[in-house]
Structure formats: structure tokens, C-alpha cells
Image 1 (cartoon, rainbow, N blue to C red):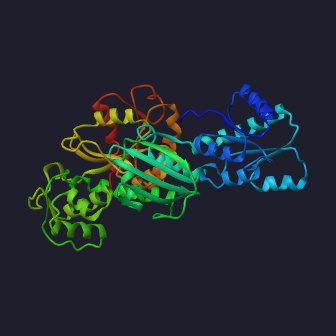
Image 2 (image 1 turned 135 degrees about the vertical axis):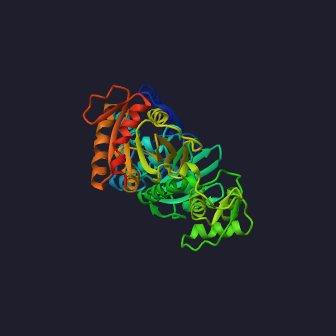
Image 3 (image 1 turned 180 degrees about the vertical axis):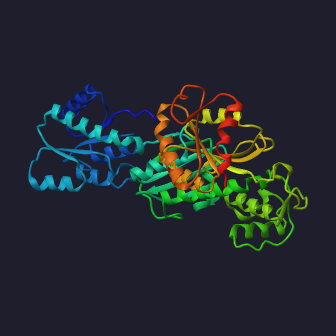
Amino acid sequence: MAFHRKSVLVVDDDELVLALVEADLRQAGFAVLTAANGKEALATALREPVDIIVSDVSMPEMDGLEFCELIRQSPEHVDIPFIFLTAHGGSEQRIRGLRSGADEYLVKPINTADLVARVEILYDRIRRTRSVSTLKGSLRDVGLCEVLQLFELTRKQGVLHLDAPTGKGELAVADGVLANAAWNDLQGEDAVFQMFTLKYGEFRFQPKTVPSGNVGHPIGLVLMEIARLTDELATVEGHIPASGVPLVARRPFEGEDADAQSVHLAITEGCGDLAAVQRRLRISDVRLRLAVGKLVESGCVAAGGAPPAAVPAERSETAGHKPAKLLVAFTDERVLSRCLALMGDVGSRPMQRSGLSDFSRVTVSSQVYDVVCLRGEKRFSFMWELALKTSDGAIFLLGSDADKEHAAFFSARAACLGTPVVRVCLGRSLGRSTGVHAITTPDDMRHALSALRPTAR
């Protein structure tokens, strides 16, 4: 969170009042900007960061009422606290001031201690909401999923700007709805899917009025769709070629998948690799990779120009069994990396990122696992519950005592879905906890995984 100074704009054509109020506010720790009339104050507020405005009503050039009405028309200042000072205490003018958008209305001569107290109360109120309204950070530290969940809970309105090495994008949110999305030349849901593949980049939130746009779905629904695509993608990841590998159409595609139909047509018409297909169709990596995976798996497209033949030796299902799908739930990426290192040989399938998950294929003894890794906290249940339904087993990685509650909730949901779960910790720190396997060597990992094999579906 960026540091933000406590700033107050004081507006009054009376130099003595201006000096007294400025001195007391500075003594209370506020940075103070001053202006002699509404016109000057409007220019200052639009140019400088201001938290609270204290303004006289009767001033030359532009009075306080007009200034308040105009500043409220700016999306960035629509909620800025506004205190009126006036020499006239009549109810009619007081009502006019409150209707123009003022939060407080004080009659001169004012008690500056009372004014400072009111300013501090208003500042405390906006400080409590600033965690969202001035949100900024790095995708390395906070994932896009977590940021959007925060917007869904707080129902804020504005635009999230993303700046990454591969491009720039925007997500507009309003009252729990994802209204609009753009990423480079992608628009709508494709832009959303593409931005969810980002691991690096900076983001900042700009509060503003958001009109209807090209998405218009509740944030929760969009996150569920991304989780579904991610889970489906993991099932065909072994068939997706690397970027630059030639793609050749071998036979017609007769399925109903619209993306697969479009991709097959593009390949048939000469788009020879993933990049060429994406340039033609302008779709997200997630949708493109999923469609290509389905086409290669079905034999309609061959990667590398070779005939669709034989399933590779790694997938020849070593002992006559197809790879088991294993969900690994984690709360700490460092613990996840150490866990995967203990699992076994990743062969030619290193860990890759797609959408909300990481995935790989590992061989432990004679068993091949297609591994999907997802955040295991309760707030991410919308993702991992979907993956649990199609998994043969699951591992929950505990990094500290704080993870026990998440692990218990995860295990309970898995039991309801009939998916076996092994809870493990790396090292002996949590090894004495009931039902937690302490893992320090590859042999320990093989022993823990063996508990899942008899019930693999």
C-alpha cells in the first residue's frame, strides 16, 4: 500500500481565518493547501491530492456552494468529505449547503479545536476505506484473483490498471460486477482470461464511475469460469505443443466445441503454429491452448508435423494405467516448490502456469500423476472444489499451524465429494499433529502418496 499524506484544502477569502485554520490543522499533523475562492480551490483540488475540503460559503469569483457542486462532478472527488464554514446560520442556507454535498456545516466564529476534531473524524473514516480506494501493488505478491475477490466483497466501483512485461490492461468493476475488460488487443472475457495468466506486473486501482461494458458478469461467476477452464486445461496439457512447434491438420474435427472448430479451421487454412492461430483468431492463451489440446488428443491435429500416432512412452501408461489426476493444495509457494522437488521425476513436463493453477506431470515409482496445484485457503474454495470433483486424490500442504483450519475445511469438502486426501507438512514441525504426514525425503512422499492409490478412480 502506498503511503498517503493527510491533506486538507482550506478555502476562505478572509486571510485571518485562513491563517488560523491552517496553523491548527498543521499542528494536528495535516498537510494544508489554501485557496482564496472557489475558482482557485477547484484548480488546486484537481491538480493536488486532497483528502478533505474546508470551505467558506460566501466568496468572490466562485462561492463555496458552486465549488462543492463542481468538485462533486469529478469521479475522483465524488466522495471527498466537505466542511462548510459560514457567517450565516440560517436554516435555508444550511439546507442548501447540505444539498450541495457538504458533510459538515459550521457557523462562524468557529472553534478551531472543534473544526480540527471534525476533520480528524472524517479523515479516520476515509482512512478505513483507503485500503481499497488506493489499492496498488505487485502481482508477484498478490494474485489477480485475490484482488478481484476484495472488490467483490467491498463492492467498490472503479478501474484496475495492470502493467506487465507483456502488455497493459484494465478491469472495470462496479458493485460486485466485472463490467469491462481490455488487455492489449483483446476485449471482454478473453482479456480477463489472458490477464489471469500473469505472474508478474504492477496494478493500481482508480475509483471512478464505471459504465456498462463488454463483460457484465458478477465477479464470482467470472472466477468460477476461469477455474473451470483451468481445470479442463490441465486434463489436456500433455497434448499441447510448445510455442513454435508446427501444427498440421490430419483429419476433420466433428465435435461441437466452437473454439476447437475455429482453431482447426485456422490450422487447415495455413496457420502453422500457436502464435499464427492466435493472431488469426485473437483469443486468449487459455482458450487457444485448451482447443489445441483437444484437437491433438483426438488426433485431428498433429504437433511437429508427425502423424497422430502413438501415445508417447511417458503416457503409455506405464503399468497399464492412465495417469492419475492429483490436486495439490498449498498456502505457501515456497513449500509447494519443495514438495514438488520431493515428488519425483518431472521428465519433459516442467511446472507450467495456466490461468489460476500450476500443473505438471510427475512419476513416482511406477505411477504417473498429472498434478494440478491450487491455493488451498477457504476463500479459494470456488477453485479447488471444482478440481476436487475430477481428481483421483489430493494433497494439502501445511506450512504452519495457521493452515490447520484451512486443511480441515478442505478435507471435509473432499470427503463430501468422495476424493481421498493426504495432509502433509515438510519437516517435523507439524508432524505430531493428528493425521499429518511429516515429509523430509522422497521415500516419505512415496509413502504418503501410496495412501491415495488404492482409491484412485
